[in-house]
Image 1 (cartoon, rainbow, N blue to C red):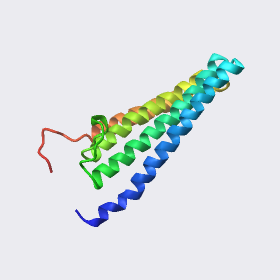
Image 2 (cartoon, one colour):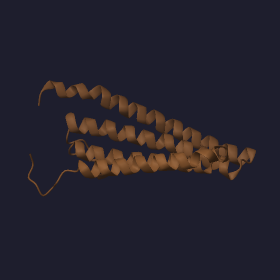
Image 3 (cartoon, rainbow, N blue to C red):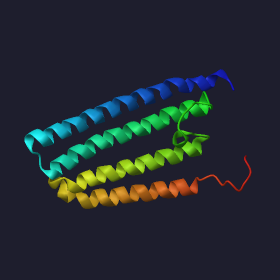
Image 4 (cartoon, one colour):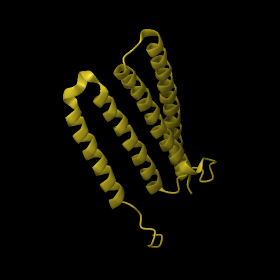
Length: 153
């Protein structure tokens, strides 16, 4: 393979660094949510929103981690030692992993809106939008799924 494949190194590294940053910030926000709840006596709904916001950052960090490792594995080092769930053999594998994490993020955001008493009017629009996005991702994943019964092209 040519040297141009190393052009992906910087975006892969940037994705991994961004993932670490988001995971650290999400973890920090989670600790703050625990402290706020125990010291200030936050309501259950306030706590749920704070925790879901932290989880959202952590999940977005996971997306960036999957992108970073996936790009590195696809273009630079196919023998990268990663867990089986993170193994990426082609762009379809990377796409399906990303769709799974994006659906989880959509669910977390929707639940955050659902439990936030200040956003009751937004629940229906967020629910319809989230549902449409998930259906669209499912259709996209199905329509672009590689057919393993056909030979490699």
